[in-house]
Length: 485
Length: 95
Image (cartoon, rainbow over all chains, first blue to last red; front, side, top):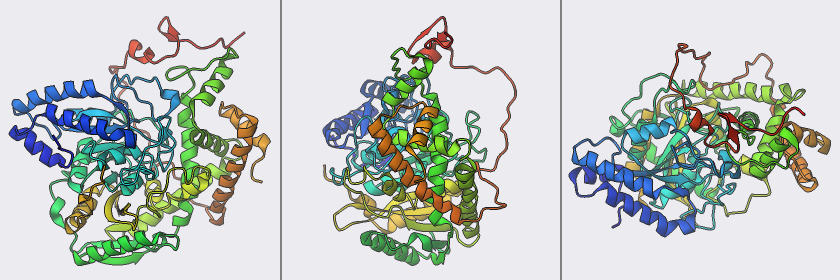
C-alpha cells in the first residue's frame, strides 16, 4: 500500500477510524525506505523490529480509544538524538559502536505522544556541515537530483521527508542545519527560539546555538511536531520555562495587517536569479494576502558568519573534548600512555571537518588569542542580536531567502571550507540572536530544484510565524510537488 | 600568514590530535584562510559592548539539592571501551 503522500493529520484520521493500522502504516514506511534509500542514503540505522513492536502496541492503544497526537505514526530522527538501546553515531566513526543508554527529552516527548521511531537519519558528522557530505556513513543524496547535496547538517532528515520515507522528522539547527536542508529538499523546517525545546540527550555541537527543530511536508504537520517537542525541561537548564501555546489552534489566522520586513542586507548581488525571482513572487503573495511589506536593515549581517564560526568552533572544541576513548565510542591505543591513547583515538575517530573546527576552536580559545577571537566574536554577537531587537520594534516578521543558491553538486565545495561556510549567511544570524525562523517551499529553479523562503519571527513567537507560513502555503502549492523516485 | 605550521602543531597537541606532515600543510593553509576571513570583525568598534554568551538572558539555574534517580553504573559503563570493578579503565597514568 502507498501512504507516503498522506499528512500526519490524514494518517491520524485513518488510524483512529480504523481504516488503517499502525502496523500497516509502519510496514509501508519501512518498505518505502527499502525501496528508495539505496539512492538517498538518508538513514544510518533503520529500527525495523523496534518500530513494528511499537506499532503493534500503538494499535492496541488505538483500539482502546487512547489516541495521542502521534499514536501509531512513523517518524524518524537525526542520528544526534540519544534513543534508548539504539545506536547513535552522530555521523562519526568515533561513535560507531555507541548504544544510547537513555532517551533524549525530545524522544521521550515523541514517544509520549505515541510516535513510532523507525530509524536514525544521516547527518554531517557532529552536525558540522552544510551539505551532508561530512558523514562517516557517506553522503546523503538530494531526492530531487541525486547528484546534488540535500543540504546539511540535517540532510538525512530533509531528504527522508522529501522522499516520503517518513511523514516528519527531527533535526537540529545550529547555524541553519534544519532550514537549509529543508530549503534544498523542498520541505518545511523550523528552528525554534533558543530555549524552546530541550537539548537534553542531543549530542552537543555548539551549546549556545544548538536547537532541536522539526521537518515535515507541510506547515500544519510542522506546527504539530513543534508542539509535541517544545517545553521546559529541568534536565536542560537553558530551556525556558514559559507556556507552550497550541500551535494548531490559530494557524488559519492569516497575515492581514501584519508588518513583514525585508532586511536589505539579505538581498545581495550574489543571490541566484531563480531564488531572487521566487522570493520576489513570495513577497507579492504576502502583499496580496494583506500584509504590509517594508524594507528594514540588519546592519551587522555581514559580520555574522565570522562571529558565528568563531563561537561555534570554540564551543565545539570544548564539547568534543569528551570524545577521548574513555567512557564511550572507539578506542585506539598503541600503548603510548594515556595522552597517546587520547591522540590516537581522536585522530582515528574524527573526520576532516570536525578536526578543522576543533583546531580553530582550540586556537580561538587559547591563551593570547582568546580576547582577539572568541571574546571579540561574542561582542559582535551582541551587536547582531541588537539588530534583531531593533528591527522587531518595527515589524512582526522578517522575510528572506534561506540560501544564496539551490542545492549544489556533491563534491563541488569539498576543497573550500570557507566558501561552504559563507553559504550559511542567511541562516546564521538567527542562531546568534536566538530567535525563531523557518524555511518553507516557495518555488523551483530552472533546473527543477526546490527553493526555500525564510520567515524569521520574534523570540517565542513561533505561533505567529507559523500562521504566516500557513497563509502562504494555502495561497500557493509549492509543497504539493514531490520528487520522482 | 596568520598562523604558522609550528602554531598549528602546537594547537594540535592541545586538541589531542595528530597531524601527519601532508595534513599539517593543508590544515595550516585552511586555518590561515579562515582566520584571515574572521579578521573582518576588527572593522567593528566593540569598545564598551558586553560579550554575549547565551541567546537567552539567564543566570545560574539552581535546583534543590535532592537525590534523584540516576542512570546507574551498569548503564553508565555499557559503552566503555574498557572497564572493571565498576570503573572505567584507562592506560597507566603514573609510571
